[in-house]
Amino acid sequence: MPELPEVETTRRGLAPHVRRRRIVALEVYERRLRWPVAARLPAAVAGKRITRLGRRAKYLLLGLESGTLLLHLGMSGNLRVVNAAEPRRLHDHFDVVLDSGKALRFNDPRRFGSLLYTRADPERHPLLRHLAPEPFAAAFDAEYLWRVTRRRRLSIKQLLMNSHLVVGVGNIYASEALFRARIAPGRRAATLSRVETTQLLRAVRAVLAQAIRAGGTTLRDYVGADGAPGYFRQRLYVYERAGKPCRRCGTAVRARTQGQRSTYYCPSCQQ
Ligand SMILES: [Zn+2]
Image 1 (cartoon, rainbow, N blue to C red):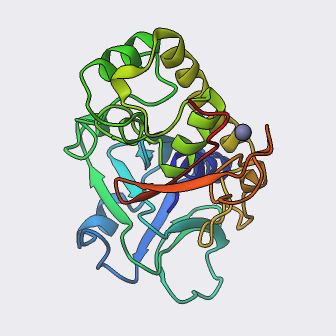
Image 2 (cartoon, rainbow, N blue to C red):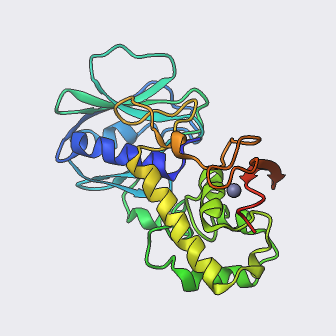
């Protein structure tokens, strides 16, 4: 599943292609995505100029001179830049055709992605309005992490992955951040010290920033905006490395199940 670094990588890859371009047409080939693509959408966006490409959590926000398109890649989606005339492949569901002769083409075998539109401030959209802080936002600071960990019976890993507390920290990055902060994933969140919450905050940001710089993590169905895979996978310390030696101390990495997700950790380095 594309996680925040993959979406941010996609945003950075697409931005130069859409900047100041005008949408010639929105061609929808399959309306049955996670939510049906509105039948009036092509008429609503045709001819409009693109003013910005932003991101909130895992939504890409394509700002138009009036209104905003909200795109979500879902479980298996990707957006790539193609020549508009290039023949479609299986599972290509829509094209945002630009006045450059290129198109943003959305491919999604599982159709959990979405394409929505709002005329209002996108931050006020029902899907975005209640989202927790971004990991790089000033509101997500050591004091905030300290406060939200105090009253939780949850494990720290499950807390990090709770999108009501912070968005965009998925399974891979929660495992990797906890390794870097030397905190065992099964610890109750409330047992973290002030020093540990500060270290964890830094580790979350560092691991996400490194993944964004590396172009996301190579997963089976993820490719970046230009079709190239990410290279962060080679730098993972624990994720999907069960039984292999810890890159720091040599102890075998362990796997366990937490909240129906696999968690990877080093039993020596993480306390
Ligand atoms: Zn270790």
